[in-house]
Image 1: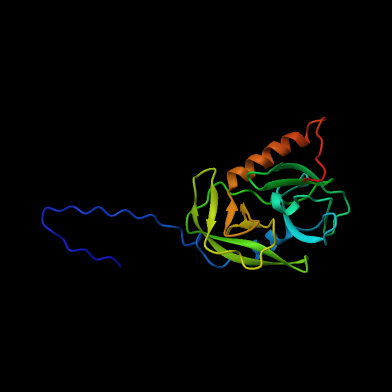
Image 2: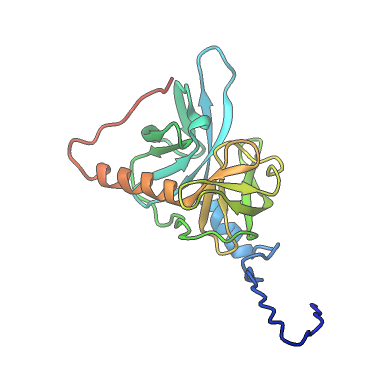
Length: 214
């Protein structure tokens, strides 16, 4: 409720920047959550002389492409996905952007779309993996998208217990960012651009894969 004293000869202009109640909602529907979790791939990352670590990737195409953070796979000697027997290869990476695209053989019947836009104040959910298997969500808000459209998403909090490489998904189940640490995430345009470039390369006969990253 806003009140304002009306003064003769004075014009007051009030501008509102409102966030949709649906977008800012703090509850995600069960079917949306379930589908998001089905497209999360728990992965075990092994590095020389260190214990295996848990990370997360997300299916973003039906050609077996997954997105994760570069920090999640940096220096990896091998990567395995839970329930996947095919070898996992690093198809592309962006060190400065903190992104990596992984590829496995075969096709899928589902994957998550990348959100076209993010509203300041909207809710987002990161994924945490108990024992690197059981998925649960950690809700935060996107307080600001710095330096649109290429900057990073500023989050209200560090997602509680989130797994490195986790996606951020919105109330409609679209991928809105990738998280690796702190209270920020990679914005959609960088994610979409790297996925598109990798998809194009996958269909070329000369397509090759990277190996372990240093």
